[in-house]
Image (cartoon, rainbow, N blue to C red; front, side, top):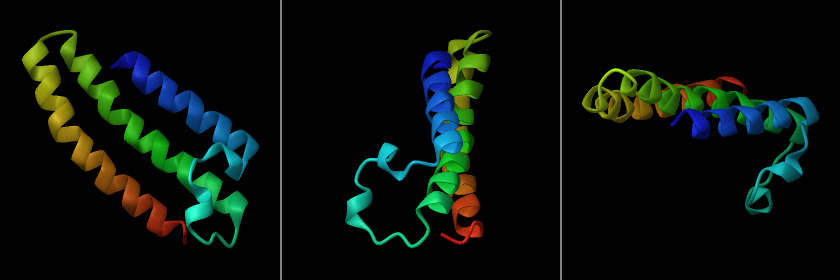
Length: 91
């Protein structure tokens, strides 16, 4: 879970630095007005979502059941926070 979280964080960092909309798949399916702002908002959402497997991996070091429970609880919460962050950014 740590490796998956690290991969998401690396992808978010690359997206935030370049602000290149071409790094996001399926962007041709929607109309995007400000592509640089969309890429930055998407990177913020990825950072928030990457916290779920990171917390599951951390608690999984101590107890596998606790790690799984943490992942099951934190993933919907992180998705909800990510949607809130994305809407707040004006996208």
